[in-house]
Each structure stands twice: as C-alpha cells, then as structure tokens.
Image (cartoon, rainbow, N blue to C red):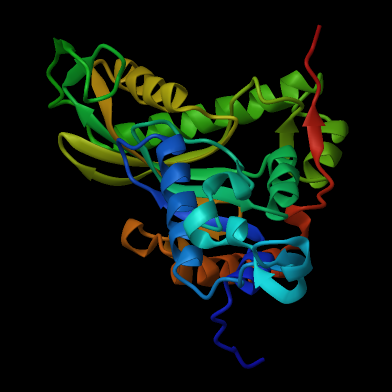
Length: 317
C-alpha cells in the first residue's frame, strides 16, 4: 500500500489512534514524558495547514446617514467570523484535545519501553493492561555497596567485600530463586506441584496473578558478569522499581555481601521491543505517526494481546 503525504492537520489528527512505544530515559518521570509527547504532537499539528475560519451567514444592514429617507438596505454577503480566526482563538490543537493513557508505568529511575494509548488507542491500552503481559528487564547490580533505598542516588549505608562472589554462584542463586517463584505460583493456586492437576494447569498457559497487587517472577538469569557489576535478565508481572531493586539487594545478602541496583532497563513489554521504541530526539509528529503504524502492525500480528485466555492465580485463604 503506497503512502501519501498529508498536509492537512485535521486529517492527521483523525488518524492519530493506537499504541505508541516510547523509550523513557532514566531520571525522567512518566508524566513529563507524556507532557512532552502531547506538546510535540500539538506543535506539529499547529504547524500544518489549518482549516479556514468559519463564514458568517448573509447579513442585511441599514446603511446611510441623515433622515430616514437616506437609509438604504444593503446585503453585505458572507463575511469571515473573526471570533474563529487563529489570532482570536489561539492554536487549533492543545494537549487537552488528545487522550493519552499509560499501559503500565515505570519508576523514575527506570528506563526502557513505555507504552501509551493515543485517542482511540486508550481502549487498546486498557485491554493490554488487563491481560497483564510479561515485561523483561535488564538489572545491573553493583557489588560491595549498599544504599538506603537500593538505588544509586541515595545515601551509602554499608560497604562489604565481594571477592568471593563469582558468576557461577550468582547463576546458581538465580536458578534457585526462579524455581522458588514458580513453586509459589502453584501454591497460590492451591495445587501440588507433583500432581496431574498442576501439569494440566501449566498446559493451559502462563499463570497470571488475579490482581495488580502481587509481583510474580517467571524467569531470572545472569547474562553478564564483570566484577563489581553483574547484569540480570528478569521476566516478571506486577513488578515495581522498588521490588526489583530490593530483589538485587536480597540476592547479594544470600551471597554474603551487599549490592545495590545501579541501572534498571525495561527491554520488552509483551511483543513491544526496545528496538522499536521511539528515542527522545524522535519525539516529533512524523516520528510518532510512523511509530503508531509500526505498533499497529504488531497488534495485528499478535491479536492475543487484546483478547487473551489467561490462567489467573487464586489467593489462598
């Protein structure tokens, strides 16, 4: 299908619907990212061709001076409605004219994939959020230094030796934690892991929490080790920045040392990958329109993102 250049702002606004995949920088709040996106969209729309001001209906006015005999009825025809002129109304498009909802938020210190639903895409963002797809993170830990909230911008509370920590020990601990979390998922369903019922439940698909209150880890492994830094790849649902940073801290305690999470990066949200994310220098109207089209193709290729049969965890009494 051939693409056609469009110069009319109203036409572009009409077709601006869908999911937007943005790369959120670390240290930037989600609301600031949202405000920047909406401001750049409006700026681009206001620089395009705008509709002309409305016309007033035909008016008949009484013209003339002096006595009543000198007055003449004049048909002045259509005139421009000055109250609808750009100099009177201001910019045609403002951020409040757009609907923009977040699929799942990220912490202030977390970078990576951030999804927004634009206009009619707000309904799609709600469907994706309700389906609770898995998010993949790369966590970089720093051994030997503990901070107050397990993030590098806080006060250092402890230092410790980490010469005894090796890549094999971290990998072994990660595998043990993954098995523990998988066992916990079946326990929350009230099912014994060694039964036929557990097998049938696993065959139905990914076990998902029934609400947003409980973090669930599906996979964790070591992908890079360069003392004092190590990188973990983690697959999780309902995770938060604080939960992930605390997980790195707890792993270090099990290794008889301390650590803090120096970097958190979301590299994939369901089928939305970081390689398709819109970088900050491309947060302009042409880049946003192109990204909306790319994400529309992903949704078309994976319709289960919007309509998914999911297995929910039931909280035990």
